[in-house]
Each structure stands twice: as structure tokens, then as C-alpha cells.
Length: 260
Image 1 (tube, rainbow, N blue to C red):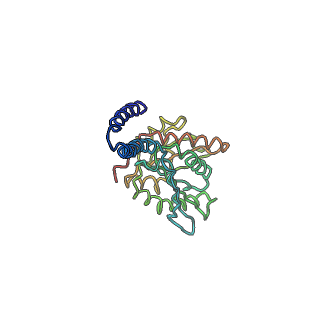
Image 2 (image 1 turned 90 degrees about the vertical axis):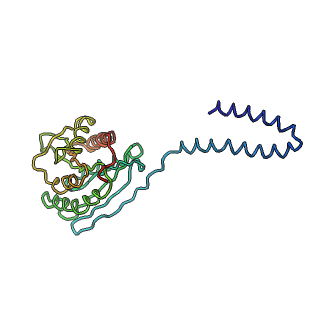
Image 3 (image 1 turned 60 degrees about the vertical axis):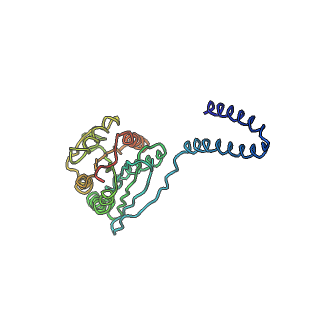
């Protein structure tokens, strides 16, 4: 850029010397000066405007559903709002696993400015029988099926991740899987296991949420996986574990959903 201005300066000096010999040189020099300033400011404006950072996303919360047993809210966008790739995280389907949901949601918010994809958080808040293992889970699953699945399906999401937490009842403490082990969902799951250390592919026996959330999503054309994090440990370790996971998701080579 500096070299170009040097060449331009020399040309202008030569032109100014020629103008001085003209009988109306003062008027011409005035017009010439204005034109020169205009020519200099335009490229400078383009340079600095190109270097301006992308605007901070305006995060909004939209209530998708309100029932006597709970609510569903869609919060976002986070990350790069200009990205054609959108990823949905589903939080709260099983209310007793709230530690995992809290840790992942906090990580998305805290790392938002460095993420290359666009993210939305779907919060399921079970208000009736939340502490009851069977009834609370069922209420969350019904809310997910009724409100989360249709909204994700009608949007151009490249991936949906149903987040859960385990206290160590399975043979693997941290793992992920897809309930329909084929196609894009399976490819994404295996790629994630390679990107995120300590998160193997493992199909949990008899999962209950998949019938209500990830299976319907896959059938509607949205790749979907289940992520289980280990919550029977100090919160800072749960959060760090989930931080590595969301950064791994952001490293995936995802494309805009071809179904839309």
C-alpha cells in the first residue's frame, strides 16, 4: 500500500508542475486538490472497513412452547451469525441431568466470539415432576418432540446434538452415538470421536430420549447425535470436558444442510 502511494505522489507532483504554467492555475489547483483527497480517502475507507470485526450477535430468547408440565425456549444465535452452518444443542430433556446442560450452555456463551459456526440452544425446562426419574424424563421428552423437533426440522440446521449427563452407570463415562448408525449422522459421530480426546463412540443400551428427539430429527433430514458427559465429578471438570466437546464440534467440516 505504501509503495502505491509513493508512485501516486510522484505522478501528482508532476501534474501540479504542469498546472502551474496554466493562466488559471489557482482554480485548477483547487479542483485538483479536492479530487486528490477524494481518490486517497476511497481506498483508505475500503481498507479500514474491510478490517472491521464482524458485529456481535444479538442473542434473543423465543418461547416455543408453554405447557402445564414445562416450557421450551430457543436462545441464540451464538458464534458466527454469518455462517451458513447452524448447529442446535438440545438441553434439559432429562431434568435430573441439569449439570451437563448448564456446563455446555455456559461454554457456548463464553466461547461464542471464537466459534466459526452459528449455534442455537434449545432449553427444555421441566416444571412438573422434574425430580422424578421416570415422570420428569417423559415430560422432557414430550416437550422435545412437540416443540424442539419441529423447529429444528424447519430450520436449516446442519447438526442437532441432544445433550445428556451420566453418573457412571454405563461402561463408558463419556461417549456419543447416533440412534440410526448410518449416513451423515454416523460420519459426524465418528469424526467427533477423532477430534475430541476421551469421547468414544458407544451406543448406550435402551436409551429413552432417542425415540422422541434424535430419531425423528434424522428422519426429517437433520443429522443428529446424542452426547453423554460424566457429571459425577467436580463442576469445573464437567465444564472443561464440555468445553473440549463444543470446540471439537466447531472443528468439524460441516456444510449447510442439503435438505433445505
